Amino acid sequence: MGQAGGRRFPFAAAALALAFSNSCRVDEPLLPTGSTGSDSSSNPGTTPGANPTPGTNPTPGNPTGNPQITAPIIADPLSGSTVSETQPTLTVLNSARSGGAAPTYLFQVSTESSFTSLVAQSPQVPEGTGGSTAWRVERTLSAGRHFWRVRARAGTVESPFSATADFTVGSTGGGPAPPPAPPPSSGTILSDPLTGGSLGEVSGGQFTSGGWQVTSSTDYIRYEVPTLSSGWVEFETTGLRPSNPSHDQFMLFGMWDPSAGDYRANRFRVHLQKLHPNPHNPPYLRLRWIANGEQHDEGSDFYAWEPGRRYQWRIEWGPSGGANQARVILDGRQVITVNYNRTYAPAEHFIELGIAERGESVVGVRYSNFRVGR
Image (cartoon, rainbow, N blue to C red; front, side):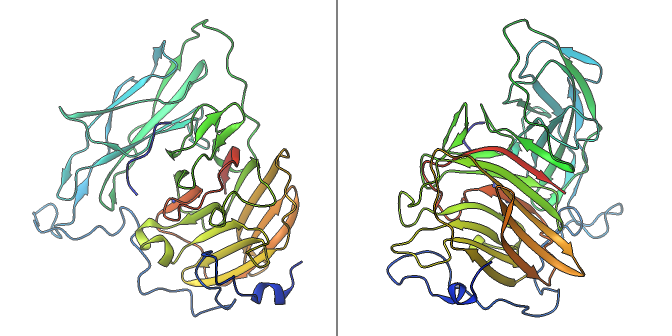
């Protein structure tokens, strides 16, 4: 996918208490683990479409003056169409709106009418001129039937999705079809092999036959997903070494709520770091979990990484045994556990490989088979 320029997703307690080295910029100071109050917030963020910013032009049909935006209308291809291109251009008639910022549009393509998993998704596409907005699918679609839909966003206000339309990609006979992606896990809502492109918003790096490779500490891929107070993320990595290329390259993965403030002060901030001895102190694999302001930091001392080995990661969270629990599972073994009280419920949910606002991605690491589920 093209470059993103758009909108702003069995551990010893003593080891966890160790301070970071004063000579190394790693993160905010570790805070005490535990509850910091009730499951409430004085600034919980804005749920898109649920509580729009008040406008200044009340009308009889809109007495509050709140900005309104309608769903886009499918224009091309219409339902039942057959297209010869494996990267077709999708076009909608622009949404109508009253007040608010100019809309952007999110296109989604799936092989399932339920959109349980996606095969292509656009970044936020600026509204086109002449009454319509178009996006060319940036990944090669397989032959067969596909479904597509579009949603508009103006500021913090989102429209409903358009009606769903379907089209069939005809066989071009232009060579063998790309190999199928690995079968998705149960409950998958997004599956992205990361070969030849991405469903997410891409900034930097390069796509190889083995996945998306980080070439600069500022590289990242960002996914916007529905709010997941209970969910999981899976991905695979190669190229991890015992020592990172630089002392300030250690961010593997993150989640946050862009409607709840800047990343470093975000009330729904999660990230996974890979550090190494000299100059860092243990633990060397660290999970920071902040759910509505309640912060926990847990980790593992493991750092014996093998650059040629493919590691399988799974981060999962949600209710567990009457409370909430987050877990990091590495190659099938649970290595980090966090128990937390407040619900993790971002109003807008960003998930990132590397984190744009940190600029601390690990150069040389290669990601593949990224999935999100509930």
